[in-house]
Amino acid sequence: MTLFSTLLFLFLPFPEPPSTVPENLFDFWVGEWNLTWEDAQGQTQKGSNRIVKILGEKVIQENFEAIPATENATTLKGMSLSVYNPQTKQWHQAWADSQGGYYDFIGQFEGDERMFVTSVTNQQGEEVELRMVFRDISEDTFVWDWESSTDGGETWNLNWQIHYHRKTK
Image 1 (cartoon, rainbow, N blue to C red):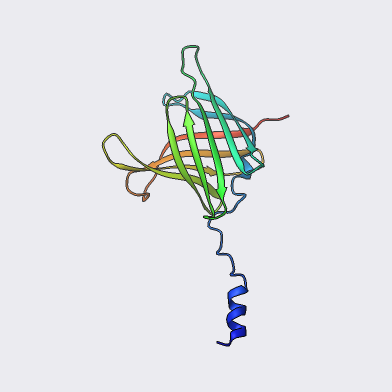
Image 2 (tube, rainbow, N blue to C red):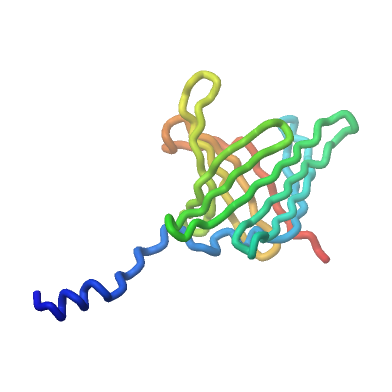
């Protein structure tokens, strides 16, 4: 290698590796949403979710609230912060709720489905994979599935399904 080609090699920018997860992967989620789902007894439940961009539009903040079906029911409220890390080219989400729940997720996508995934240890000491799957996404609706796997992601069980409908102005 000549001195010129060595210097040229040192100062030319290297191409960026391909992004594993697009930076705008969760932009569809921003907005105000009415939610419906069926509880364990087959009754339709309702809630709302307000998703906004904050901190220079670099962070997505979620504000979830289940509307109690009865006066004595406990209201589930939750909040998440989701952010894209340009160094690792990954999405991260931290979730906390009014029942003491906390999860740390990594964003992924497969085809048209977007998801946040994590791994936890259950009360029996077993490793459980958890994921939130956003699917059937259109401008005004999508489906959110909360799934779990006890076999390393080979098979998934649906734990909770929420139907999102954008609130009209």
